[in-house]
Length: 106
Image (cartoon, rainbow, N blue to C red; front, side, top):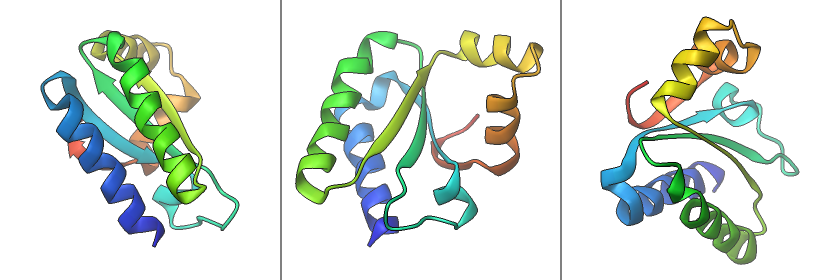
């Protein structure tokens, strides 16, 4: 059920915001295959346009209402990602090591 929900979330974001989205990446326990019933689902959205934030959070809210599932969303631009990589961010290191690309590429 969770995997199909993750796929449905990705498809919904892609459908509503496709031209603004560079990549959608699953990370954390779901990407490692360690998802528990009470786990949130961690998603990184890389976009040229941070103004998509409201729409992505609206989609995540629908999933919370419809399925009772919390999606923890992080929205970053390519510049943010490059900066975090250059700083040696543990957040980005973890995503690059364990993340599962659902759409696009990193």
